[in-house]
Image 1 (cartoon, rainbow over the protein chains, first blue to last red):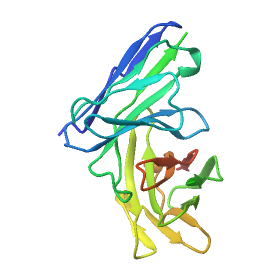
Image 2: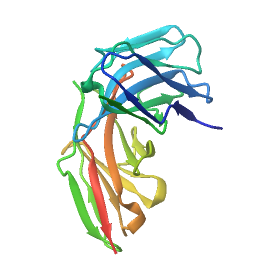
Image 3: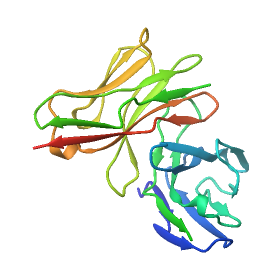
Image 4: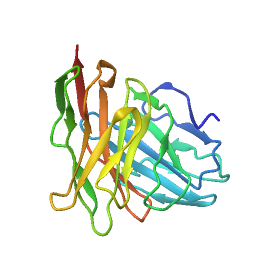
Length: 114
Length: 112
């Protein structure tokens, strides 16, 4: 199994450009989520989904959109990139929405907005 | 609201010595606590979790964690550190509304 796959691994955007970060999992997990990691701040939840067609906001959703049309895929869209969105982005999934289940993480996407 | 705190930005330990990485938590209801490790330029890897039951939880790579309800702590431990344990460690709590809350991370440096 590939687990959680994120593409691309690195990306440089100009301010105002749009792009989509891709996330796919092959474990048939119900729950998927996006985090951003910034130095000294741990990981902060951007958006999450508890199943196909269902999404909700996390701590820092502004500037990001998500959709979940299939169980496998959970893309994150930046509509108009800003320098404040320079970060490392992680996608994660878990097989259950129950609180006692761990998450599996992708390798990350390092995004720089200039 | 749920939260975790990792009071140390960095922990330095000599190879072969025991190590402890500290975590305290604040939750309402039952705590579901996790430890993850991140190696450079990699994603987070699951180490162990506390759900209920034994206060000493054993995980991957020889790590264990001690749950202490009275002190609201969930410290990560290993009896004998390896240089290869050097990495960034995150404590996390998950609520029943599908959200994980991560600490700010502790960088572990194990010196030969």
